[in-house]
Image 1 (cartoon, rainbow, N blue to C red):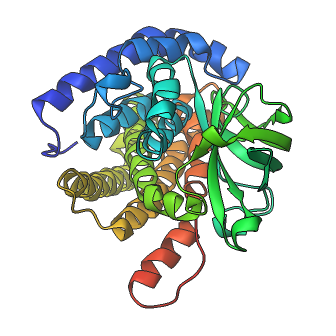
Image 2: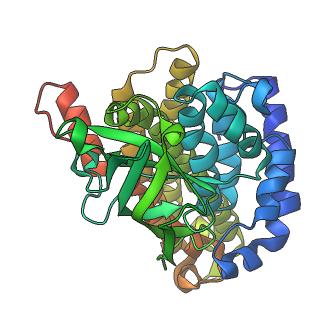
Image 3: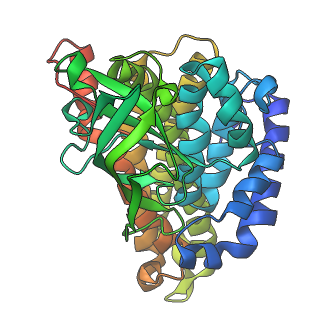
Length: 387
């Protein structure tokens, strides 16, 4: 991999810390975690103990107070290298939910939730996607109606990462009494009457991540659990989705690079017709293409990280980074499986797991088609509703 100028020595020291966490807490238990279909609380607590969950949270509330997303990017990269499920589970908590709980909350809310959030005692999720909506967040059907000094929340969500284990879910709901298009955000907590995590969804890949349906049946949500301004939920989500897409891009390309490293090792050792598989011209040319594709893509993601650190990142660039890295990731994994031959289709091989894990990245955080719509809109070519 080409040298990357985006990171300083401090970032690389942090990378060593994350890599050690992965080696100590995740790698020895990978099969157990995969079988149980979730990352158990002990690992969350260890991550909190090591300071990995509250990077951007002010020290007052138990975080490290670092206003530099490149540290989050390092964590995404190291987790993605061992499996996209780990990257996605921790991303939702530390990259996606964190800005909502830091930026949209009152002082009382921050003191109530953030210390546990940073310690791994309070695992979080975000409730955006609905069974009928997909990437169209403006079409939410979950509703919140004012009752007795609070709200009654009714509806459902699906494809929720950390869903069955979450202690707090940032939930988007329509507030129709305040306008047809009014959407407001709420912090729904485990144990609230009528709030029920549904079945743990059986996915094609990413078996280590807990993904679930969520049901809200007249859930009484106290007014003090409203996040941000009434009716400003859609705008709040739109403002924060570019960061989720940048985070996703970091994980996507790191995951692809790790799979390519595995494949390079394999084709150097695996022999066919008396020669290493990698020595055949067709395979050499293919691998030359793949390594170039990964490194050029990484350079664009690094440029996005540099611009974000300087406060200059255009949200359209994150849409480009998200769709392109997801596309590259899947192209690379498809070729890696082919280079492994029959072994690439065996579930115990890491490349097969990586292949099945990667497919969803073209769908989540706004589908790749929606990303292209956003890019097209920036060119003056239409204005769709989008996630």
